[in-house]
Image (cartoon, rainbow, N blue to C red; front, side, top):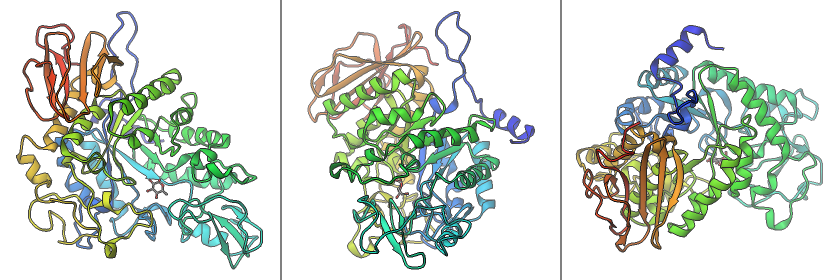
Length: 544
Ligand code: GLC
């Protein structure tokens, strides 16, 4: 538990609960902060380098908190910064309770938490529970013999050195998920690289050791965790072969034991004051299954649902994804998440093919019901970097979306070196934070206006969702909280579209900035998206 002075300090920084307005006679229902937050993902290696080694660091994040506060995000999620041999760029953890020297020190981390909280921003960190690095002392010990105290902390299996124990394949390589270990004369399981052996969560000592790593960071005042590939934790102990068509899909690994483990993990967080939260990476491309990871309000607080990230930029495709979320999440009282980009996939600016589409997508993302996650650099409209073969470093081919963030126009773009660990994204000077901040018409200003609109409207933050009629190629929906309402219209096509809406609506935010603050014309421009609000004096416009 945190000492009471500290928990008081947390509540003084920003209110943990906000009342829900609405029904006249019901008492205000407390709302956890993460339901109305916009969460910003930082990939620390690529954010900002202050030491001159070409890799971003914790101090680089701290120095740019101004940018994030000005932008208006509520919480940060940091991808791993723990001690690591970096075979999977930090998702191979060799010490869960320390900072890799590349990123700084624990003191730097403490300072970062303190500075975030002082600005009213929350801080989430990544937790990688499915596997460790093969350099983690636990694995070093585990592989040292068949009878050491940690012999059963990982998945070891006998067999012929030529025939892996089952047909599971590892991510990235598509090769068997098993590596033969000479010292133990046994196979060990790794769902990712051979340097990322899977922990055996059936062993109660593993469960306890991993809970201890959570407490370590909770005691340092983090507000919660993004949990890596959590659907893989509870494996069927028999490790059965998978049907061949499911071999490469994680659906086959959706196993009941995982839910039991998540309830245990959740209890650790619930033992702390201050609304600590978990967002889980449930990499199962099936929305109905993802919804089960919220349990009965006793597993994940939030789960990433990736099918929309893979949907084409088409109105029908997105309508189907939204419908699926409503159908599967609402009956479980599960609060959705929305994400367009992250460190594992090409940026949506690159996938959707144009800045105007990326702008419309931002309006959609921040207009939907649920918690939006932004990936650092999307607010600058960054495209993936082109990576020449000699600069490729990631075994999963994900370097493009991990290009460094340009802060300033000048060469080096605000980093301590001119040439960081990965090439700069295209047009880095024009897309630098410095250039975009000076240009009211930039993507950066659009994100800022959208975040401000969300912050200022309870309808957008937590209101109900309902579709409105719209012509082909357009999605239109209403968000409503009590008397307050907003309309969001998104034109997925490169041609203008009529969008008849009731009179008395004005444009609050437009993806291209056109007509903001004026009465809506009734027509959407090509690739244009808008947030509409009732004009002053018209019912439903009150800020909330
Ligand atoms: C998750 C991470 C990814 C990592 C993998 C293995 O999918 O997002 O970056 O490579 O897990 O930890």
